[in-house]
Image (cartoon, rainbow, N blue to C red; front, side, top):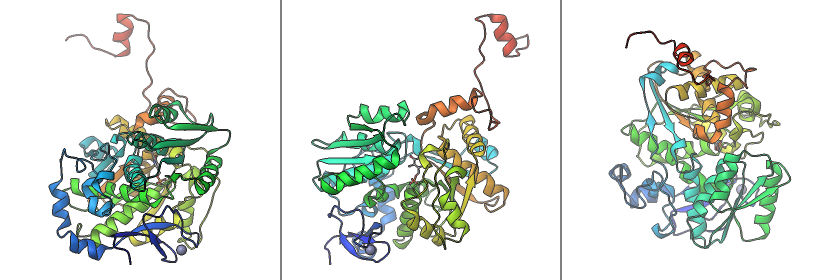
Length: 436
Ligand SMILES: *Cc1c(COP(=O)(O)O)cnc(C)c1O
Ligand SMILES: [Zn+2]
C-alpha cells in the first residue's frame, strides 16, 4: 500500500497505480481517476471546512488561488514548492435582480469561470496538471486543442523554467483569438494539416514514445483542479449547498470533476448535503443527452455537427462513464438546446452585464427549459456554471447582433447604428425629446 494519500485508480476494474506514474489509462484500457484515501485525510486534517474557510480572501501563495485553497482535497501529496499557480479561481458569483428576471429564477447565481486568467475554467485544471508535470520532472507538456485547453496549458507552462509547452492545432481551423494565447505564451505551436481528431491521435502517439506529459482531459490530474468550481461556489454561498448546479457538457470532464468534488466534500464533512446536477448539451453535438434518453443503458456516439458552442462540439465524450455516474448519483437530468436558444440565452446574460460565451449560453438555455418544465422549481437555488468569457468568442457576438445570424432568428439584437456625423441624425436616432 502506498504511503501517499492518493493513487490512480481504474474506474472499471479498480486496479491502482502510483500517482507518480506517467499513465493516462488502466491496463484494461479504461479511464483512471485520482483516488484519495478519504479516511486518512479526514484524520490528518480534521475540521477541513474551517481550514478552507480561514483561507478566504488570502493574498498569500498558494492560498490566494481558488484551487489551492482546497489543497488537502485537490492533491494532498503535492509539495507546495511544485505548485504552479497564477493564481486562478476566486471568480465572481453573480446574483442580480436583472438576471433573476431574465431567467425567471429568483435564486439564480452565475459562477463566471470566464474570469479566470486565460478566460476559461481550464485554468483550474491546468494549475494541477502543470504542477504535477513539474513534480514529475517532465520537460515537455503537450495537448491537442482548438481553444481553451491550449491557451491555459501554454500560460501555465510559461511560468515554469525548463518546461516546454507544445500545442497541436488544426491548421486554419481555429480563430485568431484561440491562436493568439498559445503563441503569445510561447508554446511551440504545431499547426497541422488535419482536424482536431487528427491532432488528438498524433499527440497521443508522440506522447507514447517520447517523454512528453499529455494534458488533454484523459489526464485525471486535471479533473482534481476543476473540482474547485463547485467547492468555491458553495463557500461563496456561506457553505450552503444550492439545490442545483447547471453545467454545459462537451467532453464531460468538467461535470465529472464537479460530481467528484461534491461527493468527496460530502464524505469529508465539508458539506452537509448534495445538490442535483443538470447537464446541458447543444443539439448539434448531443451524444450524452441521447445516452441519457436510453437511461444510460446504451452509450451513443454521434458525428458532431457545427455549433456556435464550439468548445463542446464533441461526438464521443472521453469522460462519458464518469459523467453518467455523476448524473445517476446526483439525481441529475440531461437536457439539450438549439442554436437559437443558446445564442438568445447568451445575449440575455450579456444584456444583464455578464459577458458569457456561447457554451455558457447552452447552460442558461437549458436552465430556461428546466424552469419551464418545472423540473427546477420556483424557490430553488441554482448555480449555473459559465465556462468562458464572452470575449473569447467575440465574432459570434458581433455576428449575432449585426444580423449575420438572421436564420436563427435572434431576439436580443443590438446592432450599431451607422449614421452621418451629424447632430440631427443622432438626436433623431436616439429619439430624444426636447427639454433637458
Ligand atoms: C472545455 C470547455 C467546455 C466543456 O467542458 P468538458 O469538460 O469538455 O465537458 C465548455 N465550455 C468551455 C468554454 C470550455 O472551454
Ligand atoms: Zn482497469
